[in-house]
Length: 451
Image 1 (cartoon, helix red, strand yellow):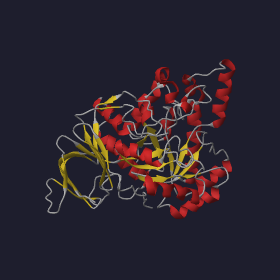
Image 2 (cartoon, one colour):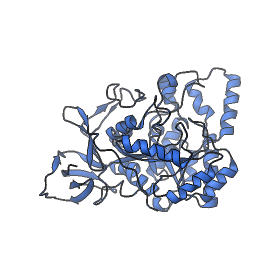
Image 3 (cartoon, helix red, strand yellow):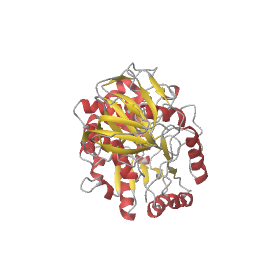
Image 4 (cartoon, rainbow, N blue to C red):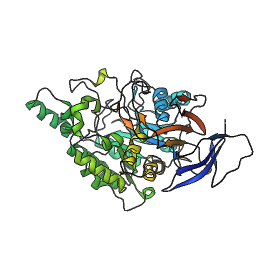
């Protein structure tokens, strides 16, 4: 493994930006000082005018393997991830077969060990009938990021609507419980009512069917269970203004028992975008009217929303076509999430320090990830070099998703990612001529968690 030295790079870390030398040795961050002299052989990275971020950690992706590899694989999507500055991911259990047993979960870890270019963890799935299997994970809480409950139906038919099962998991699980919150009864009633008046549905009907009330009723129920049992609850992809009242910014993140995630597409798109993008932006929970986007930004910046993720969920273009009932829900986003936030930085909406906080530090704190998420001596060298003086345009040619499309096609971001390091290995780099190269000789590692 090569050792690397960044000279006088602007380090974005722990709510501060300062010019430092950063020395990477044997996969870890060896020194961060005003000036570092190195006697041994080292590769120096051209740092002039660039920023160094901790690698983004995406706590919600769907990489589709096993069973749905016509859409994506752990290899293809992890390559897209590192190219976009995401050095670690946590993947969801609604693959085929669903990851509902310890053995099936380990099958996914085995695939990632061979193929993932990023660091990885996988959620244990919950069903109406596998509570005992889920609770076995209590003995492995340093090895698994959490358990996932679909409290609303989505891709994979893993809806958990048994209240006894929910109470058992919330009362006995020692792992973080991550939830997809939408009330199924409300969704079905909304769908039925709309179909009675409008037999052929349009993309813009999606937020009417999966409305604000469906989200709030389910999220508030999950929060009530967590409060009753003092569970560690993390509610995924918050989309509504009303749900923000469930969360607090009055205590530090490390002391919170209930935390929340917001996804980049809910910070970027609104219901107005269905007119041009149609089913390409159909997702669960739905992208809603603009007042919710404005509220989500406010909640993110005042720390009621704790982390930024993608819910990266690729489908083929054929699977995204009408009619409404056929068009699958989900967007591929992991290659562009950091660039999306840098776009909003250039617009004056979020600071670089806040981006590092919400995409790296807070995720590491929320999940208690061992030795990652910060630029600290002794931590793994999961690092991203960003050039704010260059731009990146999304084209079909530079997309790395297996599905081959993006709702951001032709969008130009006012920044470029020039290097991504995973465990000290420079997995991705872009030269001054815009040519990209990948080093796939070393694979990512399994994330470990502190108790």
